[in-house]
Length: 492
Image 1 (cartoon, rainbow, N blue to C red):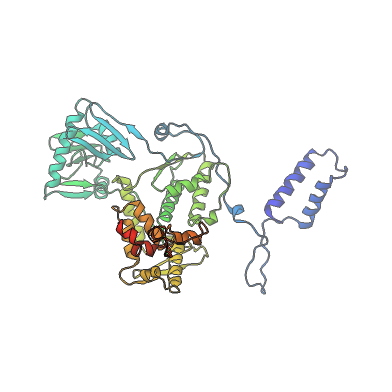
Image 2 (cartoon, helix red, strand yellow):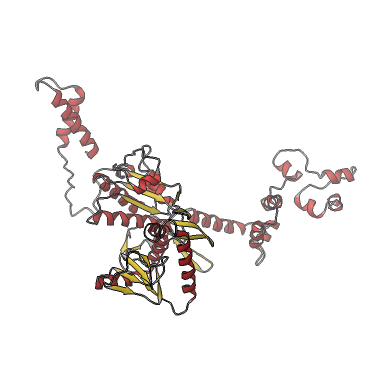
């Protein structure tokens, strides 16, 4: 008996016996049949049939559709439309939200106009617009200077930073090194760098006789007189998402990154807090969004990254069971932000590592291989594979034809590439490109084609007939128009 059928039978029988006043009353026909079916099948209990020696493989006891194997859809709760307020103060609701429309935040401070968008703050300074990390600007607007002096102080720090960047004697220390030095000696003060590059995990930052933020103390210090600090955090990780036999796709890495982030939040001891996850993968957000609201339940089996998506949905369900809020935010990629760039570095390391591979199981689908420009490719069925198959079929079909168009397409060194270059040339008008496609596909509007299509009865050239009314006219085809019709040549 199918587990869902067994659950339905138990619910109906339990509901009837709880409402029945006397057990001696004859059972209704439907309840009686359910009771007979239940007694006949017995309690399955989810046990597997015993294995036998003459059985080649373990088969399922019943067939289950792929839709039935999908995780339950996540419930949808209407959230406040104020996205910025939710990020600063996450609501105490058990749901999963997705925000895909970018918004800017006015972060002006004192006499300095500023706005933050997608993690990058744009400041209007005395020297023109200046961009920095949004987190850095948030830090400086709170601890660096007063609202009255922030404009001049930041301008001074920018000029000093540009001067130090041009200095060949400057040395750079990674934040990982500075953090370990801080932990080793218990230092709370850092000496060196400007306000634009000083590590934010020090309570006090001093340069020379000036205090960038905090206070100048006499305790233990970490001194960097010569250098600037590059942004390399110690938080992060990578792994290899392996399914190279079926081809590699960037969306799979995006799904894996989201899954690993959710796993870390579940495993972390203090993870019982809201989670805001930033991603530039539109495919990931759309896949999760289809599994939240009510409607048709999409088949995860049809998704190329269904194995990772299944784990993501299960982790989101686990967070909801714990009463936690989760919000996915869409950000733009390749904008030079600190966190996206660090994520790209981790992705490069994960792609070249040979250990710690995850999600390696194949989908048991045919794998197609082909070679293009000396490079071997392999993938399961996709749009690329279909396009390659159509191209190869066209090349095989081309051998069976011997007309002028086929000869042109088969001419070595001067054939399809000419058509491609002509089509990509922006100086060529669309009308000329349309005529080209009509010519090579035998669809040029002329009398010969019109007669073939049944649009008119005669295929004679009208111009030749008007010039020589007493003589039979030639058929009006593309070759006649381009190279034989005298009236067409005389009129250019």
